[in-house]
Image (cartoon, rainbow, N blue to C red; front, side, top):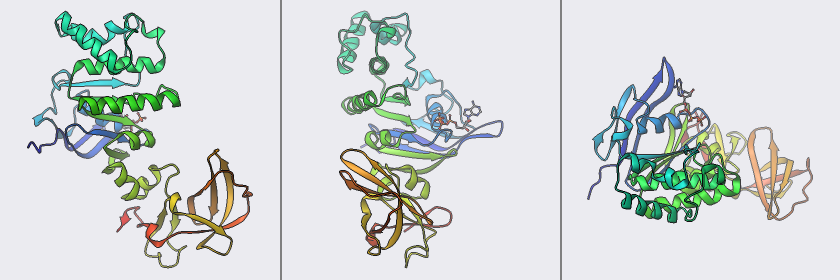
Length: 338
Ligand SMILES: Nc1ncnc2c1ncn2[C@@H]1O[C@H](COP(=O)(O)OP(=O)(O)OP(=O)(O)O)[C@@H](O)[C@H]1O
């Protein structure tokens, strides 16, 4: 069995005139994996993707694809396809012409081109739209044309940079499922840039969480959610994110600088009956549940989810309670204490 990673970054760094792009980036990606590069704006996601695409050359380190050192190889020699947020379609060409463009350039015979076109349009639900121009399509359909183009390219590795960011919430959800299904059905390795943790959590097998050009945590969605390695991961992953409480608030947790608590582990009880006393700062009614936001001078992000509608008044006093086993501990540098 081939145990070599399909894609590997070995200690990659990229700077521009001293301005840091990324540093100490080491990643191993098994074949057929969906990887999300996740993090806030400017954290280095796109730089990492561009380095893999060959659109940037690193100052340090090496990148391998299928065991070949591609660090300084031209993008066209890397056997990969790309899908960007700006669909990058030719406006004057039809859907069919847009999808077949690359194959035409590569002089793929016509009958093979048509066969691949039909297959890609079927997979992306675009059969019947062959003759339309991009201007006659919705945003979601345009994005699917861009996907169809990546499919006909037939490359085992596909890079995507925020491909859903131009779509509204409903479309984003459906195209998200399309992309995930495609990736699975075709067995592609996908490296996907997003700043949206929900997108990363729902699509990825492996999440690379980044901040200020560095990897903060790499792992499965479950690992990032259940065992955040630092307060940054704790606060970035989850909706709502993990609450962080000063270590000296809960008796017995003084060894920690911060104590983390997930909303599903918090129970609301009457004032005086729980472990921490708080004040209700806001209630957000969402139909099936109400999110009750709580104030405490030494805690950030305390939220309790209640079923249905809650009539709790702002400013009222409540207590929260929780099991000791639900607590996460972090030191003064924000690192997890096990
Ligand atoms: N060509 C460049 N010249 C100088 N600095 C750059 C260049 N490209 C990126 N950077 C810097 O590198 C850092 C990482 O940028 P990058 O675009 O990778 O972030 P990102 O996480 O993709 O952000 P966003 O989500 O906003 O696209 C930023 O500080 C950015 O200003």
